[in-house]
Length: 566
Image (tube, rainbow, N blue to C red; front, top):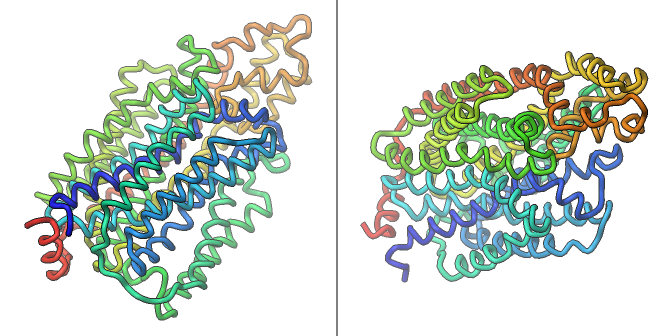
């Protein structure tokens, strides 16, 4: 029979799984410079930018596309079974990533391919973790359980930055080694301890719906991602016919998916669930939170690595590690607020906490706009701590609200939909917020760059060529911890010419001071857009309403009470 404390066993194992997946979703972001040095590849060369984007996007895109499918399979064949398979696939991919036998482009393709496989395993875990917990816990304890699990998942995306920075200083392959022992332990533990108590839904797989959804979401996210690359003389790729075809083709396929799901006998996803107010509006709020959170993550990294840390004496090469360290207050906020908010929302209902959390997060985005580019760190730390607290306060009640709003037999697919929106939101945020930043930079950066370079003796023709380069080059250089001016001006040979003040140009003060004004213009657009998203999520959370667990069927509550030892 079951372990007397089975629900806590399920919580600890699924939390390990979610933490492992989300740490790996972000661990390569901060480690990219070490990875590309390890495989001897310059990611800023025009032909190599795609390697950079796919190494960033492969894991997120795969997991976003497949979670609904694996949630449906969990409903059909057992959530624990699919979850256990996920641990196996994830761990095998981690082992393969740890032994990249190639260099240059082949080495990048090896990493991208196995990151995609790892994303498959991650999708299996994410699709079923919340459903397993919802099955294991009674309604009056579900908020705390889901809160711990989901806050660990969100915090994992930020912990990955710190862990990646620390391990990359030692050996770039260590960022993949770290998952191997935890993956093996989690696999053995899940197979020995977890049991399927959920209601199964026998049936067949909806292949037309699955294919249109997977292809549509892949095309949409790929198009948005490539929209940040320059096209012709434009700073972004939004005029590229292939980008537009991918975006509108993806939207058309997703529309076809909706039509198919309303007509087939056994759809992959019951669109009728969206008519349930708590489920539909709760997921809208979750999507807005994921978009804003992803934008914050990337913009803070660029802000710290490209401007603040060099201005305060840190070498460009060391900025990835220190960016992760200086963002710790954000993670602390998540970890503190999530379980407390889950416990309180179990007692008093989710509406006030979910709404108030996103409202607080929206206010912090406005405060980040007000901060000077060269800020006082303790003021900055207080603002991002409040942001972490706000998002942590939101996450627990939102998860409980959404998962308690669906029938027991559809919890796997509901969990998959939540994970799709979270991963999809993170992937979308890369394209959306980088595009906003690039548009913001495009208005002022060229003139500022041109005059700044000429002022240090760079010939007018070289200064003009560098100034006319798309701003995405400067962003990627700072994002990767490279010396931006050395990367942008160095290939021309101008730094070695007489009269050029190369020491100043490649020093730690010139580029941060040069870009700070244009960067703040782009930053304002990004953070105000994120604040608006958080406010939309707050309004959706308010109208979702209700108490967690209020919609559970009596038979389900009785069965869960027995399993929980009540």
